[in-house]
Each structure stands twice: as structure tokens, then as C-alpha cells.
Length: 306
Image (cartoon, rainbow, N blue to C red; front, side, top):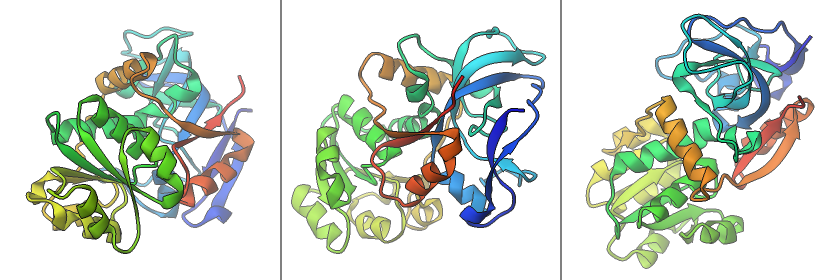
């Protein structure tokens, strides 16, 4: 039987397990996909602890980890158009991505360009799409200054690249160990930690025109007052605090059109995915620990052998 990495109840790493499960059956508007790679994101371990996405319901246990995946179509549900058996696709699974088989709703599934690897495609539906939605939401003009917190992570690295491609100056907040990486993306690196606001003022004396937050907490509280307009703050790291400070959450489009756009940007070399490390499905727990530590550069991926 095919395998999947799951959590059996809410808790810590002790509730995780590699199990065997039946091949899921695609319903209306769904594709059965043989997974080749799955992205690992902070939301994965947060769901294990009991976090519930706004507007979502708790899923029955055992719950398969993973919010983004890429693979090959092996089955097609009713009312599906534009996809065929054998198509290479990527998107947001409804039955988890850390598995040999999953279901992808066509509404959030796109065809993988030929020049794009499964590994790179697997990290686009959450991190890259969130960054794309956020930068577009801010609507900054060339020459503006954008402050990105968490600039060394998966979403942050993509946001920096997209903003730089649009002619926007970027100040990226990240740990000292990520300085070279953040600067390689074209951003001005600012070390996180005490005194952050003063370091940002030194790098951008007129203040940032907008803040794209991916960290929240004390970091967000430190940089938010630097904005002349609190409404120019968006966050995917601490949405309630962003609203409290006068900003807003990142407005996610969650559609195939955005996935097509980010895939084209990667395929043409405009955007780099920066996959830092890949783990086998049997090493999914180690992949989660790496992301849960909060110190990874770029993205972590689980690769599933065909």
C-alpha cells in the first residue's frame, strides 16, 4: 500500500508517523496525483499543534501533512476539464502532500512547465504564491522602498525577488547568518534582534513605504511604527497583530492563474526557488524539524520516488 506521513492527534513530534493508506479516490473537480515532491512549510507543523486555518474545519485523524505538492496525474474525477492522465501538475492538495498519492482540486492546480523540475514546482503553491499575492496587494511603484521581515525564508526570499524585479528597493530583515543570502537576492540586509528599528532607520532614513511581514511578534512591533501609513503593512506571519497595528493580512488569491504566473517566472529565470535541502518521504520528520527550527534558508522539500 502507498505511504503517507501523518499526525495522529494534536501535539508535538511524538504524534507523527509514517503509515500506509489507501489510494484516495478523486471526487468532482479533483485529480488523483502520484506525488513526486512536496513543499514543507511552517503551517504544516502549526496544524499538527491544533492551529485551524480561518474558514477551515478540523480534519479527521490521521491527517496527512503538506499544503503544496507536484506530481503526475493518475486519475481524474467528474467535471474536470483541461487535464489528462500523465499530465505533470502542481498545486494545493486536499489530502496532504507528504504522501505517495494525493488529491489536487483543479481550482488550485496548474500544469508544470516542461523546464521546471517537480522539486521546484512543489514549493510554488504556498510560499511563492503568498509572496506574489502580497507584493501585488501592496501595489508599490518602482523606486519605492519595501521592508520584508523574514527575508531569508521561503516566502521572504520570493517576495524580495519579485519586488526587485518590479524596480522596488528592498530592505530585508533576517538573522545575521542569512546576510549573504539576503544580499544575493538584491536586498539590503538588516539583522534582526534588539535595536532593529534603529538599524532600519539608518538604512532607510525616510522610512519604508510598505512592510511585508513574515515573522510577527516583537519584530513586527518594532518595524510597524516606521511606516507613515499603517495601512501599508501586510502580514502572513502574524495577521491578528498586523490588524491591531492598522495593517492587514495578505489577501490570498488561491487560484490556478497565480500558480501559472509564478511557474512562468521560475521557468524564465526571473524567479529562483532556492530549495535548500531535500528529504525522502521516510525523512519527513527531519524535514519538519528543520522548518520548525525557524532557521532554514529558502525552502525544504520532500521528494517522493516514482
